Every structure is written in structure tokens, then in C-alpha cells.
Image 1 (cartoon, rainbow, N blue to C red):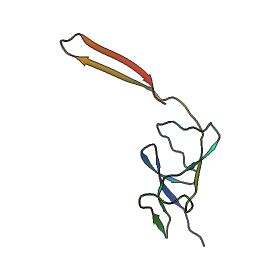
Image 2: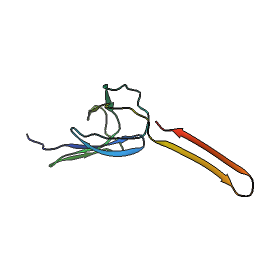
Image 3: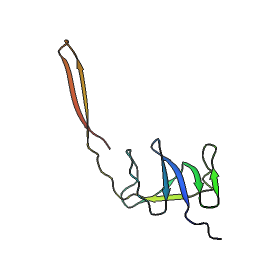
Image 4: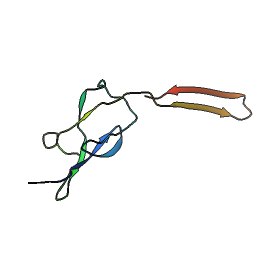
Length: 100
């Protein structure tokens, strides 16, 4: 049985991503795995293809679907600047943080 190109919608770090085989995704957040390790994506919302679709309510069970990914790169993103100001109060606060 040829099922064609299969896709899945997964939940990572509060965001939903539609992924297929050999896709690269980039998200902001912390992953416990090191570079090169395989991780299993547990929160799968939907799996589908040309002739079928399986929808979870709200998630699909982990014994029904298995989606794995490889960590390619972990890096810091650009600097996040926090600036607070109150007029006529001589109050200014500046803080620059690196976001993981």
C-alpha cells in the first residue's frame, strides 16, 4: 500500500509545526538533548497523507504514532532588549539578555 507523502502537526514549545520527512524546523526554547542526539516528539496533534488523516482529541497516543527528530544545532538567538521608562520620574532601566 503506497500512502504517499505523510505529514504530521506537532506541538513544540507552545507552537504548532507541520512537519514531513527531511524537514528542518527552528524554534525558540530549550532542548535537553545535545547536538546529534535523536529526540522523540511526544505531542502529536494530527497525522495525515493523501488518502487518510488521523486527528487527536487533543493529542494522539504515543503508541499510535512515533515521530523522531535529530538535533542539528543549538545556538543563542539575537539579543533581546528590555527598556523601561517613566516620563518625568527620572526612571530608566536598560537590560540586554541573550535568548536561548
